[in-house]
Length: 243
Ligand code: F6R
Image (cartoon, rainbow, N blue to C red; front, side):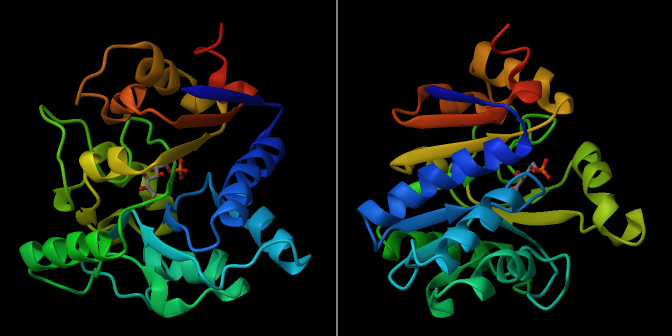
Protein backbone atom coordinates (compact mmCIF):
# COMPACT_ATOMS: atom_id res chain seq x y z
CA UNK A 1 0.00 0.00 0.00
CA UNK A 2 1.37 3.40 -1.00
CA UNK A 3 0.00 6.56 0.55
CA UNK A 4 0.15 10.02 -1.02
CA UNK A 5 -0.63 12.71 1.53
CA UNK A 6 -1.88 15.82 -0.22
CA UNK A 7 -2.29 19.38 0.94
CA UNK A 8 -5.98 19.70 0.12
CA UNK A 9 -8.76 18.49 -2.18
CA UNK A 10 -7.29 20.21 -5.26
CA UNK A 11 -3.90 18.64 -4.65
CA UNK A 12 -5.50 15.22 -4.06
CA UNK A 13 -7.45 15.53 -7.31
CA UNK A 14 -4.34 16.45 -9.29
CA UNK A 15 -2.29 13.59 -7.85
CA UNK A 16 -5.05 11.05 -8.47
CA UNK A 17 -5.32 12.32 -12.04
CA UNK A 18 -1.55 11.86 -12.37
CA UNK A 19 -1.89 8.16 -11.53
CA UNK A 20 -4.76 7.68 -13.99
CA UNK A 21 -2.97 9.69 -16.69
CA UNK A 22 0.14 7.53 -16.32
CA UNK A 23 -2.05 4.45 -16.75
CA UNK A 24 -3.67 5.83 -19.92
CA UNK A 25 -0.34 6.93 -21.41
CA UNK A 26 1.42 3.65 -20.59
CA UNK A 27 -1.49 1.51 -21.82
CA UNK A 28 -3.78 3.44 -24.17
CA UNK A 29 -6.25 0.54 -24.33
CA UNK A 30 -6.58 0.24 -20.55
CA UNK A 31 -9.74 -0.92 -18.83
CA UNK A 32 -10.51 1.68 -16.17
CA UNK A 33 -12.84 0.89 -13.29
CA UNK A 34 -14.54 4.14 -12.34
CA UNK A 35 -16.40 5.51 -9.33
CA UNK A 36 -18.98 8.19 -8.74
CA UNK A 37 -19.61 10.22 -5.57
CA UNK A 38 -18.35 13.66 -4.70
CA UNK A 39 -14.68 12.80 -4.06
CA UNK A 40 -13.58 11.88 -7.63
CA UNK A 41 -15.22 14.89 -9.30
CA UNK A 42 -12.00 16.94 -9.09
CA UNK A 43 -10.03 13.99 -10.47
CA UNK A 44 -12.33 13.86 -13.49
CA UNK A 45 -11.99 17.63 -13.94
CA UNK A 46 -8.21 17.25 -14.07
CA UNK A 47 -8.47 14.41 -16.60
CA UNK A 48 -10.77 16.50 -18.80
CA UNK A 49 -8.33 19.45 -18.62
CA UNK A 50 -5.43 17.21 -19.67
CA UNK A 51 -7.50 15.84 -22.54
CA UNK A 52 -8.30 19.40 -23.64
CA UNK A 53 -4.60 20.26 -23.54
CA UNK A 54 -3.95 17.34 -25.88
CA UNK A 55 -2.10 15.27 -23.26
CA UNK A 56 -4.56 12.38 -22.95
CA UNK A 57 -6.31 10.21 -25.51
CA UNK A 58 -9.34 8.17 -24.41
CA UNK A 59 -10.14 6.71 -27.83
CA UNK A 60 -8.98 3.18 -26.93
CA UNK A 61 -10.08 3.23 -23.30
CA UNK A 62 -12.78 0.92 -21.95
CA UNK A 63 -14.53 1.67 -18.66
CA UNK A 64 -16.56 -0.33 -16.16
CA UNK A 65 -18.24 1.54 -13.35
CA UNK A 66 -18.53 0.20 -9.85
CA UNK A 67 -22.23 0.50 -9.32
CA UNK A 68 -25.65 1.82 -10.22
CA UNK A 69 -28.92 2.37 -8.39
CA UNK A 70 -31.49 -0.30 -9.15
CA UNK A 71 -34.54 1.34 -10.69
CA UNK A 72 -32.85 4.43 -12.18
CA UNK A 73 -32.33 4.79 -15.91
CA UNK A 74 -29.33 6.55 -17.41
CA UNK A 75 -31.48 9.60 -18.09
CA UNK A 76 -32.23 10.12 -14.38
CA UNK A 77 -29.94 12.89 -13.17
CA UNK A 78 -29.05 10.92 -10.03
CA UNK A 79 -28.12 7.75 -11.89
CA UNK A 80 -24.47 6.90 -11.98
CA UNK A 81 -24.59 6.60 -15.79
CA UNK A 82 -25.77 10.20 -15.95
CA UNK A 83 -23.00 11.25 -13.54
CA UNK A 84 -20.32 9.61 -15.67
CA UNK A 85 -21.66 11.07 -18.91
CA UNK A 86 -21.80 14.50 -17.30
CA UNK A 87 -18.43 14.57 -15.52
CA UNK A 88 -16.26 12.64 -17.95
CA UNK A 89 -17.60 10.77 -20.95
CA UNK A 90 -19.24 13.72 -22.71
CA UNK A 91 -16.07 15.80 -22.27
CA UNK A 92 -13.40 13.47 -23.68
CA UNK A 93 -12.98 11.41 -26.85
CA UNK A 94 -14.14 8.13 -25.32
CA UNK A 95 -16.20 5.70 -27.40
CA UNK A 96 -19.49 5.60 -25.42
CA UNK A 97 -20.13 2.03 -26.54
CA UNK A 98 -17.05 1.02 -24.53
CA UNK A 99 -18.32 2.63 -21.31
CA UNK A 100 -20.16 0.25 -19.01
CA UNK A 101 -22.36 0.82 -15.98
CA UNK A 102 -24.64 -1.84 -14.41
CA UNK A 103 -28.10 -1.64 -15.97
CA UNK A 104 -30.28 -0.02 -13.31
CA UNK A 105 -33.37 -0.52 -15.46
CA UNK A 106 -33.07 -4.33 -15.37
CA UNK A 107 -35.58 -5.43 -12.73
CA UNK A 108 -34.27 -8.99 -12.60
CA UNK A 109 -31.33 -8.65 -10.21
CA UNK A 110 -29.80 -12.01 -11.07
CA UNK A 111 -29.81 -11.14 -14.77
CA UNK A 112 -28.45 -7.62 -14.23
CA UNK A 113 -25.58 -8.95 -12.12
CA UNK A 114 -24.77 -11.92 -14.40
CA UNK A 115 -24.78 -9.59 -17.43
CA UNK A 116 -22.40 -7.19 -15.71
CA UNK A 117 -20.03 -9.96 -14.60
CA UNK A 118 -19.99 -11.17 -18.21
CA UNK A 119 -19.09 -7.65 -19.42
CA UNK A 120 -16.21 -7.39 -16.93
CA UNK A 121 -14.94 -10.82 -18.07
CA UNK A 122 -15.32 -9.92 -21.74
CA UNK A 123 -13.15 -6.81 -21.40
CA UNK A 124 -10.43 -8.90 -19.76
CA UNK A 125 -10.62 -7.54 -16.22
CA UNK A 126 -9.70 -4.14 -14.83
CA UNK A 127 -6.29 -2.47 -15.16
CA UNK A 128 -6.93 0.36 -12.72
CA UNK A 129 -9.88 0.68 -10.37
CA UNK A 130 -10.70 4.10 -8.92
CA UNK A 131 -12.56 4.09 -5.58
CA UNK A 132 -14.04 6.47 -3.05
CA UNK A 133 -14.70 5.45 0.56
CA UNK A 134 -18.02 5.51 2.38
CA UNK A 135 -18.23 6.68 5.99
CA UNK A 136 -19.05 3.13 7.06
CA UNK A 137 -16.13 1.66 5.09
CA UNK A 138 -18.11 0.72 1.99
CA UNK A 139 -16.47 0.55 -1.42
CA UNK A 140 -18.78 0.53 -4.39
CA UNK A 141 -21.97 -0.39 -2.59
CA UNK A 142 -20.32 -3.22 -0.66
CA UNK A 143 -21.76 -2.42 2.73
CA UNK A 144 -20.49 -3.77 6.10
CA UNK A 145 -21.41 -7.43 6.27
CA UNK A 146 -20.33 -10.75 7.76
CA UNK A 147 -18.65 -11.88 4.54
CA UNK A 148 -16.93 -10.30 1.53
CA UNK A 149 -19.28 -10.50 -1.46
CA UNK A 150 -17.38 -11.63 -4.49
CA UNK A 151 -18.96 -10.64 -7.77
CA UNK A 152 -21.61 -8.17 -8.92
CA UNK A 153 -24.64 -8.41 -6.67
CA UNK A 154 -27.75 -6.53 -5.65
CA UNK A 155 -27.54 -4.83 -2.25
CA UNK A 156 -30.01 -3.28 0.14
CA UNK A 157 -28.52 0.09 1.02
CA UNK A 158 -27.94 0.79 4.70
CA UNK A 159 -29.66 3.64 6.48
CA UNK A 160 -26.33 5.52 6.75
CA UNK A 161 -25.78 5.30 2.98
CA UNK A 162 -29.36 6.37 2.25
CA UNK A 163 -28.86 9.26 4.66
CA UNK A 164 -25.54 10.26 3.02
CA UNK A 165 -27.06 10.12 -0.47
CA UNK A 166 -30.26 11.97 0.27
CA UNK A 167 -28.56 15.30 -0.40
CA UNK A 168 -28.72 14.41 -4.09
CA UNK A 169 -32.48 13.78 -4.13
CA UNK A 170 -35.45 16.03 -3.46
CA UNK A 171 -36.56 13.96 -0.49
CA UNK A 172 -35.25 10.92 1.35
CA UNK A 173 -38.12 8.76 0.03
CA UNK A 174 -36.74 9.27 -3.48
CA UNK A 175 -33.38 7.66 -2.66
CA UNK A 176 -33.36 4.16 -4.18
CA UNK A 177 -33.21 1.38 -1.59
CA UNK A 178 -31.20 -1.06 -3.69
CA UNK A 179 -28.21 -0.95 -5.99
CA UNK A 180 -26.14 -3.20 -8.21
CA UNK A 181 -22.48 -3.22 -7.30
CA UNK A 182 -19.27 -4.93 -8.29
CA UNK A 183 -18.12 -7.32 -5.59
CA UNK A 184 -14.95 -7.22 -3.51
CA UNK A 185 -13.33 -10.04 -5.48
CA UNK A 186 -13.72 -8.12 -8.74
CA UNK A 187 -12.29 -4.97 -7.14
CA UNK A 188 -9.41 -6.96 -5.64
CA UNK A 189 -8.72 -8.54 -9.05
CA UNK A 190 -7.97 -5.12 -10.58
CA UNK A 191 -4.26 -4.86 -11.34
CA UNK A 192 -4.04 -1.48 -9.62
CA UNK A 193 -6.45 0.14 -7.16
CA UNK A 194 -6.50 3.89 -6.51
CA UNK A 195 -8.61 5.31 -3.69
CA UNK A 196 -9.31 9.01 -3.22
CA UNK A 197 -10.31 10.33 0.21
CA UNK A 198 -10.87 13.89 1.32
CA UNK A 199 -12.02 15.73 4.43
CA UNK A 200 -11.86 15.37 8.19
CA UNK A 201 -15.15 13.47 8.22
CA UNK A 202 -13.35 10.54 6.54
CA UNK A 203 -10.40 10.48 9.00
CA UNK A 204 -11.90 7.89 11.41
CA UNK A 205 -12.94 5.42 8.71
CA UNK A 206 -9.63 5.80 6.82
CA UNK A 207 -7.73 4.87 10.01
CA UNK A 208 -10.11 1.99 10.73
CA UNK A 209 -9.91 0.62 7.19
CA UNK A 210 -6.15 0.81 6.73
CA UNK A 211 -4.71 0.53 10.24
CA UNK A 212 -7.36 -1.76 11.72
CA UNK A 213 -8.17 -5.44 11.25
CA UNK A 214 -9.16 -6.82 7.84
CA UNK A 215 -12.85 -7.59 8.20
CA UNK A 216 -16.01 -7.55 6.07
CA UNK A 217 -17.41 -5.24 8.77
CA UNK A 218 -15.15 -2.64 7.10
CA UNK A 219 -15.22 -3.69 3.43
CA UNK A 220 -12.38 -1.35 2.37
CA UNK A 221 -10.03 -3.11 4.81
CA UNK A 222 -9.67 -5.90 2.21
CA UNK A 223 -7.53 -3.48 0.20
CA UNK A 224 -4.74 -3.91 2.76
CA UNK A 225 -4.13 -7.22 0.97
CA UNK A 226 -3.99 -5.74 -2.54
CA UNK A 227 -0.55 -5.86 -4.18
CA UNK A 228 -0.79 -2.45 -5.85
CA UNK A 229 -3.04 -0.22 -3.79
CA UNK A 230 -2.52 3.55 -3.82
CA UNK A 231 -4.31 5.75 -1.29
CA UNK A 232 -4.39 9.41 -2.30
CA UNK A 233 -5.84 11.59 0.42
CA UNK A 234 -5.73 15.09 1.71
CA UNK A 235 -4.14 15.84 5.10
CA UNK A 236 -7.50 16.02 6.82
CA UNK A 237 -8.65 12.58 5.67
CA UNK A 238 -5.28 10.97 6.46
CA UNK A 239 -4.83 12.74 9.80
CA UNK A 240 -5.70 9.73 11.98
CA UNK A 241 -3.96 7.14 9.78
CA UNK A 242 -0.64 8.95 9.70
CA UNK A 243 -0.57 10.38 13.24
C1 F6R B 1 -19.47 5.52 -5.93
C2 F6R B 1 -19.40 4.56 -4.86
C3 F6R B 1 -19.34 4.90 -3.42
C4 F6R B 1 -18.62 6.20 -3.07
C5 F6R B 1 -18.65 6.45 -1.57
C6 F6R B 1 -17.98 7.76 -1.21
O1 F6R B 1 -19.51 4.89 -7.19
O2 F6R B 1 -19.42 3.45 -5.18
O3 F6R B 1 -18.72 3.83 -2.75
O4 F6R B 1 -17.31 6.12 -3.54
O5 F6R B 1 -19.96 6.46 -1.12
O6 F6R B 1 -18.73 8.81 -1.71
P1 F6R B 1 -18.24 10.33 -1.62
O7 F6R B 1 -17.05 10.43 -2.51
O8 F6R B 1 -19.40 11.13 -2.12
O9 F6R B 1 -17.89 10.58 -0.20
